[in-house]
Amino acid sequence: MNVLVINCGSSSLKYQLIDSETEAVLAKGLCERIGIDGRLVYQKAGNDKEITEASMPTHKEAIQMVLEALTNDKTGAIKSLDEVNAIGHRIVHGGEKFASSAIITDEMIKTVEECNDLAPLHNPANLIGIRVCAELMPNVPQVGVFDTAFHQTMPAKAYLYGLPIEYYKNYKVRRYGFHGTSHSFVSKRAVEFLSLDKDNSKVIVCHLGNGSSISAVQNGKCVDTTMGLTPLEGVVMGTRSGSIDPAIVEYIAKKENLDLAGVMNVLNKKSGLQGMSGVSSDMRDLRAAAAEGNEDAKNAIEVLCYGIAKYVGGYVAAMNGVDAIVFTAGIGENVGMIREKVCSYLGYLGVTIDAKANEAMGEEVVISGADSKVKVAVIPTNEELAICRDTVALVK
Ligand code: ADP
Image (cartoon, rainbow, N blue to C red):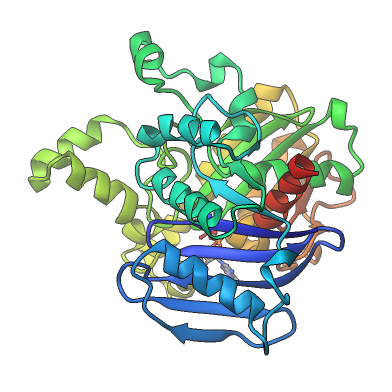
């Protein structure tokens, strides 16, 4: 079965066409600057990227262009749209309504809309992609895969905040967690790859990318995670502050003469590694600056690793132990120095690192030493493949 995986943002759209039997990516790419001007990147497996500048006033034209590229006579991955058997959509927020992926129906869309307040920038964009696909390919089944679903197994003690309980009861203010598709994929793969007993396993997944989150997964179920009501909470990220004293919001608003939206913009877009270093949100630039002696860049890296290690320690306490610590996403998969620094805080757990194995970049590998009491591994994430698998499981 061929599955078209779509991740629709407010002005961009990422896609992959995956053959679910072989799990091979037949073609992939993205549309950028939708509603501004428009740019399609398309790459058939084995070919170079093709870039087309073309007007994309709305997501409809963008998806139309993707479908035309996929079925193009010369470089198309398929001959006709009949060869698209199902569509899997990433949906950011499923609130408390979705604890797993779901077939898309009119009723299901209404339920997703009820969660829009929780992700006002993302959910409406995801829904546009769903509606346009339904219009252009009315007979193809569609499935929604939620970033929040995997974390719905968290107990109340992990998801409730120390706020008046009415805010939870009336407005559903609680920890939801994000990157759930990645945490689910990577924790499941960790159990297989490290030969753990699924029903008796304690895994900590460190998803470290532009956005970063950590989760504690016990017996295959998420018991805690660092992101909260929104993806702003938790460890220091590329441009997001992660957790801070909430009183800083008022303090900075007064000092900088900003309104709430202004402070939130700083916390989401101008903080984190970017704001701390004054250099970049990108780990590659940060490492280069640190190597040249930039103290702010060095401190940003130290704050990140120290913060991750503290969450790992917290999750060891939450699960009363840990069998495996797994690193994934852009930084987790590629930057041995960060993995090594995080693990340097974990000697009390009997963690040791094999320096040679830890040089690995982007591959599945055990990086703990033979004598380590806890297995430490790198497992590349693949959210598109996870969406494809869920889609197939539901439409079959
Ligand atoms: P997103 O959250 O946007 O999906 P990614 O998972 O792609 O992000 O991670 C992006 C981060 O990974 C950036 O900070 C980038 O610098 C870092 N990264 C990716 N590849 C490398 C590499 N080879 N060396 C150092 N950092 C890398």
